[in-house]
Image (cartoon, rainbow, N blue to C red; front, side, top):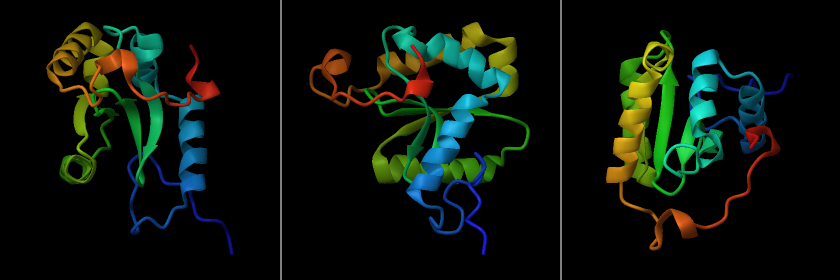
Length: 153
């Protein structure tokens, strides 16, 4: 009997959570090593707190999902979607993320990131500035989160 297949970025949570946390973490590490170009371009703008001082992590396991980017201080998930994404399934996952964890999901298409990165960053900055801080003293004092070596500096 073969080991369970790691989910693609579209399959997180499929099958009632049958994929183990270890499998999800391994898949997230693989996704960090082999990022599509739109995600790589956005990550270059987010990494090292480059966007208005906000800390982001990439390819983060949250529950039974792997999200493209996550800002812990604001509870903001960012997804960069290709042509194969199902808008109805995405909306259901985003609603569950909001309902279960209080995290907001913001989605951009590959096309938006590749053709209008400045506009994407402007939208992100506005959403981040308007979002409530998850910790009393804001970005400067949020709980320390371990950073993966693959995230880079």
